Length: 210
Image 1 (cartoon, rainbow, N blue to C red):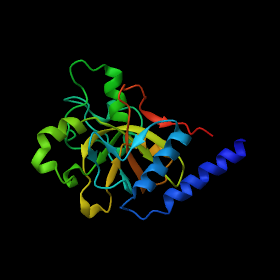
Image 2 (image 1 turned 45 degrees about the horizontal axis):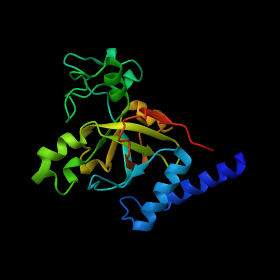
Image 3 (image 1 turned 90 degrees about the vertical axis):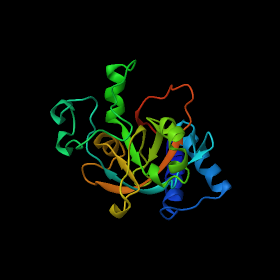
Image 4 (image 1 turned 120 degrees about the vertical axis):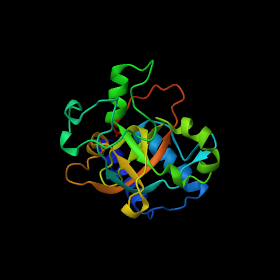
């Protein structure tokens, strides 16, 4: 049964790899991918959430630096992967430290944050005052078709620039959890909304169910 399940998961990864980057997906393809995610990672993901869709769902992710969690934060306070450095400014959604948020929650959100090109969302410029708070620290599921590993993360910043050839970014912990870093700093991934209305799914690596 284990061998059969592992083979089925490998088939699913091969299925994800066949899609070209920045692919457009049919309704049936989206449904098949969501079903596969639920089967192998035991979480609910979505291509569309509350009427919102991403500019792209499969593209290259690149290594990002640590982000400031609070004013005066420094890279030597970050813990692991200090060699990645720290960004010159706070993320587009502000500091992770906020009133009512526990210290551990703040730390976890910085450890497992992702970046996507919010400025490429068609409605962003006209409706940013609504979309920005909706996307702020929104949970996403990131899957590496190359390694089969997945990570739950929050949206912590906007970018990267189009000229970089990357459409997503990931913290050092995200890239490590995907089985990429330190060997790779850029690789194709799938980025999907995580459908977690009760906020019950923890951030970090997701253990495949095989």
